[in-house]
Image (cartoon, rainbow, N blue to C red; front, side, top):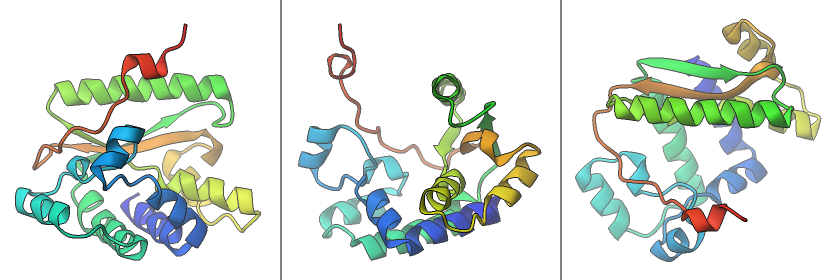
Length: 184
Protein backbone atom coordinates (compact mmCIF):
# COMPACT_ATOMS: atom_id res chain seq x y z
CA UNK A 1 0.00 0.00 0.00
CA UNK A 2 2.86 2.36 0.81
CA UNK A 3 4.33 2.03 -2.68
CA UNK A 4 0.94 2.84 -4.22
CA UNK A 5 0.62 5.96 -2.04
CA UNK A 6 4.05 7.14 -3.19
CA UNK A 7 3.21 6.49 -6.84
CA UNK A 8 -0.10 8.35 -6.51
CA UNK A 9 1.62 11.31 -4.83
CA UNK A 10 4.14 11.41 -7.68
CA UNK A 11 1.28 11.35 -10.19
CA UNK A 12 -0.52 14.23 -8.44
CA UNK A 13 2.61 16.37 -8.39
CA UNK A 14 3.36 15.54 -12.04
CA UNK A 15 -0.10 16.79 -13.08
CA UNK A 16 0.23 20.61 -13.19
CA UNK A 17 -3.48 21.28 -12.68
CA UNK A 18 -3.93 18.80 -9.85
CA UNK A 19 -0.70 19.97 -8.23
CA UNK A 20 -1.86 23.60 -8.38
CA UNK A 21 -5.24 22.65 -6.89
CA UNK A 22 -3.60 20.77 -4.02
CA UNK A 23 -1.11 23.58 -3.42
CA UNK A 24 -3.99 26.04 -3.19
CA UNK A 25 -5.05 24.39 0.08
CA UNK A 26 -1.77 25.22 1.81
CA UNK A 27 -2.22 28.17 4.16
CA UNK A 28 1.22 29.62 4.85
CA UNK A 29 0.19 33.15 5.79
CA UNK A 30 -1.51 33.91 9.14
CA UNK A 31 -4.00 36.12 7.31
CA UNK A 32 -5.02 33.27 4.99
CA UNK A 33 -5.36 30.92 7.97
CA UNK A 34 -7.59 33.38 9.81
CA UNK A 35 -9.74 34.13 6.75
CA UNK A 36 -10.23 30.57 5.45
CA UNK A 37 -9.95 28.47 8.64
CA UNK A 38 -9.23 25.36 6.52
CA UNK A 39 -6.48 23.68 4.58
CA UNK A 40 -2.96 22.66 5.53
CA UNK A 41 -0.67 24.76 7.71
CA UNK A 42 2.94 24.50 8.84
CA UNK A 43 1.74 23.98 12.43
CA UNK A 44 -0.27 20.93 11.43
CA UNK A 45 2.59 19.18 9.63
CA UNK A 46 4.21 17.56 12.67
CA UNK A 47 7.57 19.19 11.96
CA UNK A 48 10.27 19.27 14.62
CA UNK A 49 10.61 22.50 16.59
CA UNK A 50 13.68 23.88 14.83
CA UNK A 51 12.36 22.91 11.38
CA UNK A 52 9.00 24.53 12.11
CA UNK A 53 10.70 27.69 13.39
CA UNK A 54 12.86 27.93 10.27
CA UNK A 55 9.91 27.22 7.95
CA UNK A 56 7.97 30.09 9.49
CA UNK A 57 10.89 32.49 9.13
CA UNK A 58 11.81 31.63 5.56
CA UNK A 59 9.76 32.62 2.52
CA UNK A 60 6.95 30.24 1.62
CA UNK A 61 7.89 27.29 -0.56
CA UNK A 62 7.08 27.35 -4.24
CA UNK A 63 4.59 24.81 -5.54
CA UNK A 64 7.44 22.84 -7.13
CA UNK A 65 9.39 22.75 -3.86
CA UNK A 66 6.23 21.88 -1.95
CA UNK A 67 5.52 19.01 -4.34
CA UNK A 68 9.07 17.67 -3.94
CA UNK A 69 8.74 17.90 -0.15
CA UNK A 70 5.38 16.08 -0.26
CA UNK A 71 6.72 13.21 -2.39
CA UNK A 72 9.79 12.86 -0.19
CA UNK A 73 7.72 12.95 3.01
CA UNK A 74 5.28 10.39 1.60
CA UNK A 75 8.16 8.07 0.71
CA UNK A 76 10.45 8.60 3.70
CA UNK A 77 8.05 9.43 6.52
CA UNK A 78 4.37 8.76 5.86
CA UNK A 79 4.70 5.29 4.34
CA UNK A 80 8.01 4.37 5.96
CA UNK A 81 6.69 4.86 9.49
CA UNK A 82 3.03 3.84 9.19
CA UNK A 83 2.15 1.22 11.80
CA UNK A 84 -1.03 0.41 9.87
CA UNK A 85 -3.30 1.70 7.15
CA UNK A 86 -7.05 1.88 7.15
CA UNK A 87 -9.62 2.37 4.43
CA UNK A 88 -13.27 3.20 4.90
CA UNK A 89 -15.28 1.44 2.24
CA UNK A 90 -18.89 2.02 1.25
CA UNK A 91 -21.20 0.44 -1.30
CA UNK A 92 -20.55 3.18 -3.86
CA UNK A 93 -18.27 6.19 -3.35
CA UNK A 94 -20.50 8.29 -5.66
CA UNK A 95 -23.52 7.86 -3.36
CA UNK A 96 -23.96 11.06 -1.29
CA UNK A 97 -25.52 9.25 1.66
CA UNK A 98 -22.63 6.79 1.72
CA UNK A 99 -20.17 9.69 1.56
CA UNK A 100 -21.74 11.36 4.62
CA UNK A 101 -22.02 8.08 6.53
CA UNK A 102 -18.41 7.18 5.72
CA UNK A 103 -17.24 10.68 6.65
CA UNK A 104 -19.02 10.46 9.99
CA UNK A 105 -17.34 7.12 10.65
CA UNK A 106 -13.96 8.63 9.72
CA UNK A 107 -14.51 11.52 12.15
CA UNK A 108 -15.46 9.13 14.97
CA UNK A 109 -12.44 6.92 14.28
CA UNK A 110 -10.12 9.94 14.21
CA UNK A 111 -11.48 11.22 17.52
CA UNK A 112 -11.20 7.77 19.11
CA UNK A 113 -7.63 7.33 17.87
CA UNK A 114 -6.68 10.78 19.18
CA UNK A 115 -8.20 10.02 22.59
CA UNK A 116 -6.00 6.90 22.72
CA UNK A 117 -2.87 8.90 21.91
CA UNK A 118 -2.61 7.58 18.36
CA UNK A 119 -1.68 9.60 15.31
CA UNK A 120 -4.20 9.52 12.49
CA UNK A 121 -3.20 10.90 9.09
CA UNK A 122 -5.61 11.09 6.18
CA UNK A 123 -3.96 9.88 2.95
CA UNK A 124 -6.23 10.03 -0.08
CA UNK A 125 -3.73 10.29 -2.91
CA UNK A 126 -4.80 6.98 -4.46
CA UNK A 127 -8.51 7.81 -4.62
CA UNK A 128 -7.71 11.36 -5.79
CA UNK A 129 -5.75 9.95 -8.73
CA UNK A 130 -8.49 7.47 -9.57
CA UNK A 131 -10.99 10.35 -9.64
CA UNK A 132 -8.64 12.55 -11.66
CA UNK A 133 -7.96 9.89 -14.30
CA UNK A 134 -11.70 9.25 -14.56
CA UNK A 135 -12.48 12.98 -14.90
CA UNK A 136 -9.88 13.39 -17.65
CA UNK A 137 -10.80 10.19 -19.44
CA UNK A 138 -7.19 9.09 -18.97
CA UNK A 139 -6.10 5.48 -18.53
CA UNK A 140 -6.84 4.43 -14.95
CA UNK A 141 -3.57 3.13 -13.55
CA UNK A 142 -4.66 2.82 -9.90
CA UNK A 143 -8.11 1.17 -9.69
CA UNK A 144 -7.00 -2.40 -10.39
CA UNK A 145 -4.20 -2.28 -7.79
CA UNK A 146 -6.39 -0.40 -5.28
CA UNK A 147 -9.09 -3.07 -5.67
CA UNK A 148 -6.50 -5.82 -5.16
CA UNK A 149 -5.42 -4.22 -1.87
CA UNK A 150 -9.00 -3.66 -0.72
CA UNK A 151 -10.25 -7.07 -1.76
CA UNK A 152 -13.26 -5.15 -3.12
CA UNK A 153 -13.96 -3.00 -6.17
CA UNK A 154 -12.06 0.30 -6.27
CA UNK A 155 -15.41 2.11 -6.34
CA UNK A 156 -15.90 1.17 -2.68
CA UNK A 157 -12.74 2.84 -1.26
CA UNK A 158 -13.98 6.17 0.12
CA UNK A 159 -11.12 7.49 2.28
CA UNK A 160 -7.88 6.12 3.64
CA UNK A 161 -5.44 6.89 6.40
CA UNK A 162 -2.39 5.74 8.27
CA UNK A 163 -2.40 5.23 12.02
CA UNK A 164 0.29 4.73 14.61
CA UNK A 165 2.14 6.18 17.57
CA UNK A 166 3.31 9.70 16.71
CA UNK A 167 6.85 10.84 17.40
CA UNK A 168 5.71 14.46 17.74
CA UNK A 169 2.44 16.18 18.42
CA UNK A 170 1.48 18.51 15.58
CA UNK A 171 -0.06 21.87 16.24
CA UNK A 172 -3.78 22.31 15.91
CA UNK A 173 -5.38 22.72 12.52
CA UNK A 174 -7.53 25.78 11.96
CA UNK A 175 -11.22 25.32 12.69
CA UNK A 176 -14.29 27.27 11.76
CA UNK A 177 -16.62 28.37 14.52
CA UNK A 178 -19.90 26.54 14.92
CA UNK A 179 -21.80 29.61 13.75
CA UNK A 180 -19.83 29.54 10.48
CA UNK A 181 -20.96 26.02 9.60
CA UNK A 182 -24.42 25.62 11.11
CA UNK A 183 -27.43 27.39 9.68
CA UNK A 184 -30.87 27.68 11.14
